Length: 483
Image (cartoon, helix red, strand yellow):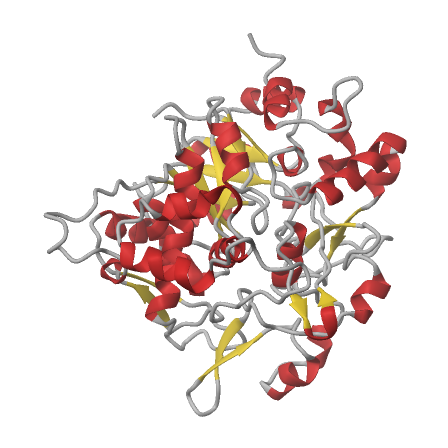
C-alpha cells in the first residue's frame, strides 16, 4: 500500500463523516471518519429519517442482519422526528455494556466506513480517542468488518491497540485495561469484546467474513510516547502522526507545571515540540499535524523527513464536513471581514474538556464558548462517552464526569473545584453536526466549535466570488506546489 501524502483529520463527533472521508479518498489521499460517538450519530440519523437511505443501505451489507434490522426497527422514523422532539437515547457506555449496545457500536462504525469506501478503491481510516475506552473495542471491530485500511488513535496512550487489531483480524476476543480515575493504579479493571457477539451463526455462512488487519497510526506529541508504544508492540505500529499544539481539538498538556499566558491559555515552550531527529530514528513513517495546512508547510514537512501531513481545520469547514452549514457560514463570513479577529477567536481552554486536556475552542456567539450560554445550560450527563471510571470503597465501579451536575459529581467522591467551567462535549459536539438533543423544557443543546490555529487562513481555499469551498479545493491547494 502506497503511503498517503495527506491524511484528513478524524475530527470531533461526526465532523469527519463518511462524505468528507470519501471526498478525500477518491482523490488518492487518506480519508478518515471519526469513530467518536459513532453509534449515537448513526441512531440519530435514523431518527431523522435517514435521508437518502444511506444508513439503511450500509446496514443491508452488515454481516449480522439480525443486528442491522434491530437497529432499524428500534430507531428509524419514517420522515424523521420533528425539530422539537427529543432523540431516543442509547444506553450510556460502561465497562460492562449490554450485548445490544456492543452490537450497535460495531454496526455504526461499519456503516460509516462502508459508506466512505462505497464505489471506489481509495483508502479510508477511522479515528478514535483512546480515552473512550468503554466504546472503542466493538467500534474498531465493526470498522474492520467494513474493510477499514487505517486505525488512528490519540488523546491517550493506546498501548493495547496493536494486539487488539491482531486478535480481531482472527475474529478472536480482545481486552484492554481501563484507565481509572483517582489514585487507583493498582486496581485491575479490563473491558473486553468478543466478535462472536456480532458475527452471524456459522450455520448461515460456511466461514466467518474475511477481515484484514488495518495499519495502526498512534497520534503522539513526543518521542517519549512514540518510543514507549513502539517498545510495547514492535511490528504492531505502522507509523506515527506527530501532532503539535497548533492542532484543533484536544492538545497534550505542556510539560512540567501548568502556566498560563495573558489570555489564560496553557503556556507552551520549545520543550513541548517533538524532537523530529529522534522521531526519524525510530525508523517508521510519520506525518506532521498542527499548523501544516499549506503547501509550503507540506514541502517543509517532507524536507524534515515526514511522509506527509495531517490536516484537520481546513477540512472541518469545507462543504463535505459534518459541521452544520450555518456554523460554517458564520465562521467563513467573519473570516472574510477580518481574519485577525478570527485568529484571536481560537482559545486553548485549559478547563473546557472533562478529560482535563487543553481543548481549542472557537469563540462563536450562541455557542457554549459564550459565558452566558454556558451559565444558562442545565448540567446534564445523558450521553456519557467521557465519563471516567473509579472503584468505590465498596468495590463497585463508579462513573463520573466533571461536566455532570455538581452535586452528583461531589456525591461520587469528586472535588467541586474540578467542575468549574467544564463543558459537556458529548452533547455540544453532537449539536455541531445538527444532531443536538432537545432537553426538558424544549431546551436545545448548544454547539461548541473547535478548530486549530489555521482557522484564520481558511480564505486561502476560497476562490474568487465563492463563499465556501470543497475538500477537493483543499487537496488541490495543498498539492499546488508539487509537480
